[in-house]
View (cartoon, one colour):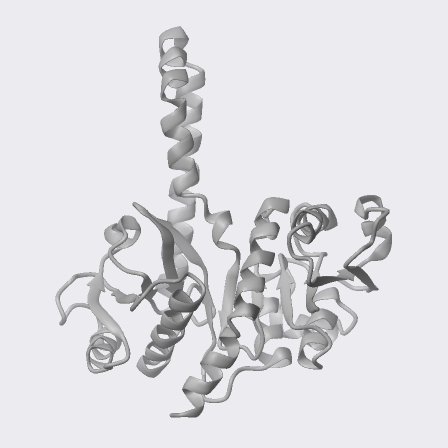
Length: 332
């Protein structure tokens, strides 16, 4: 049986969303045991009578969104996230999933679960939807490292390629560098150096720079960015998408009968766009470089988001992705 440690206390909807996701996933993941870490009293109203494949570990503390990441994992030793991470470190469970404080989860992954030997800076890696493709765009780093060195970004390119190939099933993934121009000499010294290093790597299918306006066009399978730029870009895309959808909805529903009729006729097209750019189907953001799968689901995530994240973990364990990365960096 595969065992996944689940921190149920960090999401905006509390334990309900996590347990909804568990109940959806266990129908298909029959070889999974879902070990739920959190306050049992808060879980009771949402737990099913049939507890097949579900275990509960009661905890008395919770890491809050406003808590300082490293300080919180050191001081809140009975927090659901901390105990879940320790269980993975000790080999009791195979992976960790949380909707909680991103910084604290990154700290838990690095300092408790541990990083793979040879990887100096693990990276946060979501998969973004792109135009005319169901493979998505693997982005790293999306915020684990606000500053970094060129060698770190090269390692991220390698790990992103492993993930894209093994989990997203992309043959010979195209790797691009996020930059402020397409020419080789664009950007600061860091990005110029990374460009040259990636160009010289025979094991990386490097296709050059990509600018922000090209990110969702499906030109690359892996996008490498320093953590600051990657995080800003990710949040900008999320905010832009949310704003546009809100404005569209407001205008289509509140501008007279003709507009409403037009909206009704266009509904199939809107559904197709929504389906194509549905981030939930790609699972959560992975802390690449940790010794075991560590998955961050967005705090606003619902049961459906968590359901897909469990399938993501299942694929990572099936493909033994962490071991692939370990073996690759052991050879260096």
